[in-house]
Length: 361
Image 1: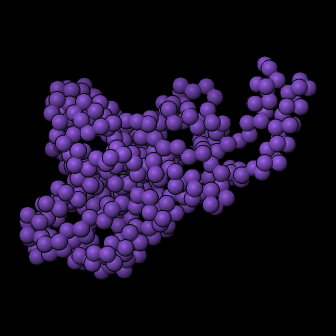
Image 2: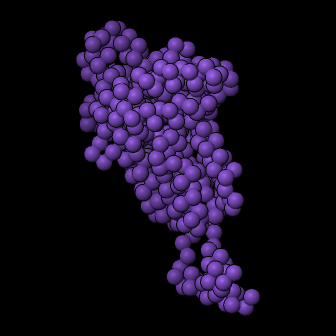
Image 3: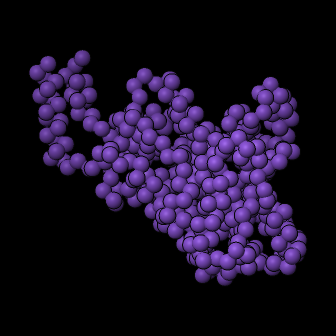
């Protein structure tokens, strides 16, 4: 080994990295891009828990032939000039997360990845390791734990670990559904909306749906959603009849967690509730499921059923309160790892010692 190589090894230190991970997005709002994305997403056994052989026939024989075109049309409604909303917001969150933890005295390298689509988890973990990170915190952006989301991220990290010879020290964030700063951030988002637009008669908290059997199998997702909703209602000092919980994004014929969002909104309209505000506390960033399914489709259903005013309250995205919460979650899980920025003088001394050590061998 050359002296330069030995110096580099001794001088590397213990850099700390954070990988912020969200669900995923197609590369473009086109049928071919959707076909690639859906094939990866719906092939995950964590997402669809039915016998593989049967599901393969359904997925490749029906779904991937039909759904990409309709899904692409939906994505085109919400696609931004910079790209997919979820990718745009997640990239901004990663950049701001680096700044927020830095303002609290922690020096970390922050990158972002998608469980499905690009940038891939494995590639971003490789990039963090190449940058010298020997300790990495994996931060799934999902506030509530589910096997279909959080555990799937850890599956992908595990697959990368099996292919990687020199592994960094790893930590994982399972959930932050009851984190006080996260609840405060949600409440601030609602209050800011009420100040701008006025207050609807009902606040509907819509979470992403999961098959009902996941609750029976022991998945804590349903319970964590209900706790988030209760804590948010308490923080906003809402009466019991002023808020509702519902679950969106059903797929297939099986029973999913109830009550369902669209039927709930239609029932409220038919019962004479003229105005509703809808927030999606299970999403860290706006995406197809919030911008199209809720802000467009659910709004149309509510108004068609007789409702008068429908307001969608955006996700936390890169709001100061939301980023404060995310930074707090990261910093708690980074405790015990040295994230103190090294002065220029200390860095020069370390490099000098490393070169001297290499030369003496």
